[in-house]
Length: 408
Image (cartoon, rainbow, N blue to C red; front, side, top):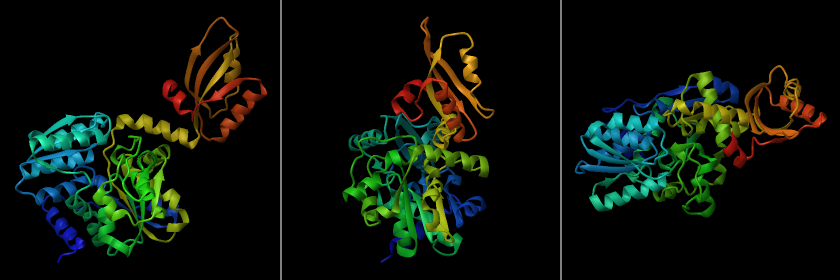
């Protein structure tokens, strides 16, 4: 009887007639920074800029009798299904959350053409998942899960087949982003005990970690959709069945603001465009530290479907995380020269990015919202020290989620 690895190799061989393998590239910048041999498996360079078309291809090739395929996706799985519907000459109905970035919606339409219909349903992935499954129950068609499907898991495992061929052996350490678990379950099933693993999730969508802690899949009460490619409220039953033994020590959660620093670094230093979920594995290297020193490490850069309209938000979050941008509310005296006095406190590397009177009246003081960008976090110690010494009243709201949401 053929093993899981045999099936994955067969799927990889079939794929070569449809799209080429994604490159495995050694990254000199990351290797030098972390003292390890760091390789990037560039799934962001696939025809749909993510690994998702692998699972879609494998599942659809195994069901030649099906005429209609239905899926729910935050974007990347949708593009993979659309691409394969067109390739196999099948009809597809794709349900997407209304919060899906426009870039992913447009690309899904381009890949699918007349073969697919897109329906925008719900604010979160799990909302459109329920709608897609309800549609299948009423209208028929094969529901193609983005992760909780044995054929999809097998298809995603072809990433491992290629790594083994390209590297010539299993890596010492494999760093894998996790959404619903299809990629991670496939790679774990393919490599087994041949390498160490780190499974990485965004802090606002850590469904694998929650399941490991509970011993079974659980539904997260709230999901942060910033890393939309990995923002899943509940890990799959089939995927968790393969992942349940990995242990919490192999699980990492990543702060979304810190993730933004890695997105910018990869763009500015390496010229690599990664979506938030696609940058998870690279960002995780910061936490692995000495544990990977001298080892051969493969990071799966799982997607590059990044809408550049989000770049200002990414920069903003990265600056705030790095401590070089702060927002505060200042009580400013209502007298001539008061603003000039404040400006004199600013150093040569401090720049005003926001200045807005929140309340100005004939009274003695007015409240001002001020945003300051600088080159080093320590510059704020100097600025706030001067404000304290001169009797100014102010409140730093940079980390105040509620106030920042309304004012910034």
